[in-house]
Amino acid sequence: DTAFGDYFGAAVAVSGSTLLVGAPRKDTDVLDSGAVYIYDISNPTNPVEIAQFVAEDAQVGDQGGGAVDLEGTVGSVAVPATDDFGSASGSVYLFDATNGQQLAKIIADDSDAGDLFGSSIAQQGDQLLIGAQGDSDLGSHRGSAYFYDISDPMNPQELAKVNASDGEDDDSFGYGIAMDGSIALVGAPRDDQDGYPSGSAYVFSLDETTAAPEVGFASPDLSLRVDAWPSPTTGNAHVSLDLESGGPTELGLIDVHGRRVSTLFRGFGEAGRHVYGIDTSNLPGGVYFVRAQLGSDVATRPLVVSR
Image (cartoon, rainbow, N blue to C red; front, top):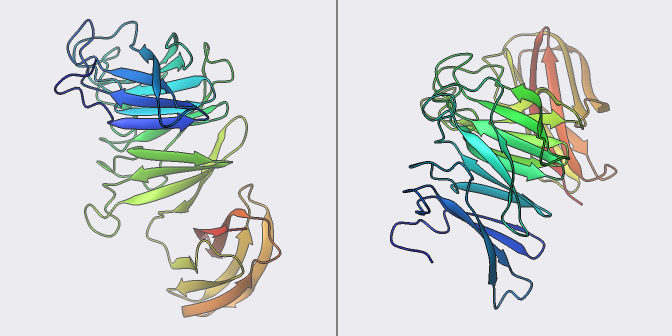
């Protein structure tokens, strides 16, 4: 039943034999409320539409369906234009992907106008990460991301809110997000660390109940810089460490839980560039972090080990 201007296909997500397709400009009972189409693709040559999801409280211009995700039978759809707590405060809906029935509506505990809560979403198991690129609690449009437990999809629980440690106004932190295992990645495309808008991405470590402190990618102006390549690697990798000045230095590899895997250097580091080799052949596949410390300054860089 698509029509001109529906934007069917603006977002898609697949889990098993179920496909979600977002149509954010779909007219339902109201103009541009948006909808999510649910398909059975067990026979991929003959997809069958089984249901549609439309928010129970859909309003004109909500445009739900610009971002969707799916895990098992629980689907999620971002609707950042909703205005429960002011214009474009935003929300995310959970629904049953077998029949399109609404399960819950998620609104941030500190929701405010312009937050754009639902700028992006990522679902994994019983976890849901939601970006709010317009959140201005720490500065104008710096952005944030929220971590939820959705083990009971009818009663989602907010576990944590994360922000960039070096966030600045208009960074749009939360514009794009992803999760894999215990790692979350949050994009800030308007971060101007290397010129506006050069952009950056932040890596966070997650456990079952909370979001741990940020551990990688973008960092403030520090007295050191670290890099690692190639990433992914299947064996030998290289690590570079640039020190602006000499001082007590430590360089090592840690896992996503912050546990030290190996030490590459510990002692007095001379100013300049230093390159080290690291053998990852005996490490399990996954995401690790090269961690460097000079005095009180710390820099990290992710290193993916592939198996």
